Every structure is written in C-alpha cells, then in structure tokens.
Image 1: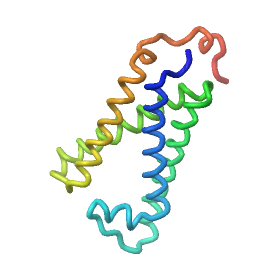
Image 2 (image 1 turned 45 degrees about the horizontal axis):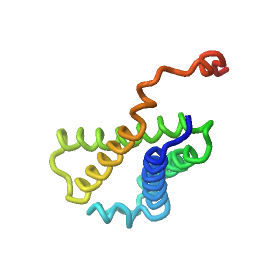
Image 3 (image 1 turned 90 degrees about the horizontal axis):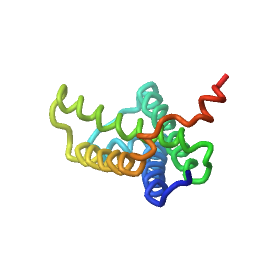
Length: 142
C-alpha cells in the first residue's frame, strides 16, 4: 500500500516539527526555553539533560520524514510519530493537573501537538485498523 497525500503531509508536518524543535533545543536551549518564559542558568548538567532529549526528538523527526520516501521505514515512522505526538500532549495534560496552569506559550504548544496528533490519527486510521501483514508474521525479527 503506497502512502496517500494525507499520510505524506502528516509525516511531513510531524517530522519537520520534531526535527525543528529538537534541533532548536540542542543548538540553543536558552533561546528555546526563553520562548516559554523559562530562564535557564549555566548549569552544564541541566543543559545536558535538556539537549539529550532534544537530540532524540530531532532523530525521531528524521525517522518520521524518512517514512515519506522509504516504504520499509513507514511502519516505524508511523509508530514514532504517533508516540511522540500523543505522548507530548499527554505529559502536558498531566502537568496541568498536577502542577497547575503553565504559560500561554506552553498551552499553545499543547494545542499544536494535539492538532498534529489529530492529523496523524486521521491520516493513519485505516492502517491502524488493519491486522498485521502475513509477511511480518512469516519473517519474525531475530
């Protein structure tokens, strides 16, 4: 089954978003978090702890984008995109309940992440309902 235009758009939007945000966190964490009203100090340990998941997010963005062109990577791209863009809003909602109302910038991020999650679910709903293909059962991973 080839990618539909909506699937390509969903992977493109999610992949570019994850790559851009992750890359921004890695390259300029002070500026990135300042946009949320968060002031970071010069603590090397804190900056390392922020850059590491930023690099992971950028890597996931690349995997999402690869699914547009590489059919063999598509199942991984879909799983990664859905995981990232369902987990981020879920984590923010937990924070809202446990910690209270964050800044308007964080709420805006929640809205964008939820919109991307909705786009992904809409784009891949038919694939998510399909049973596993016989080829994957016939050739288990070693």
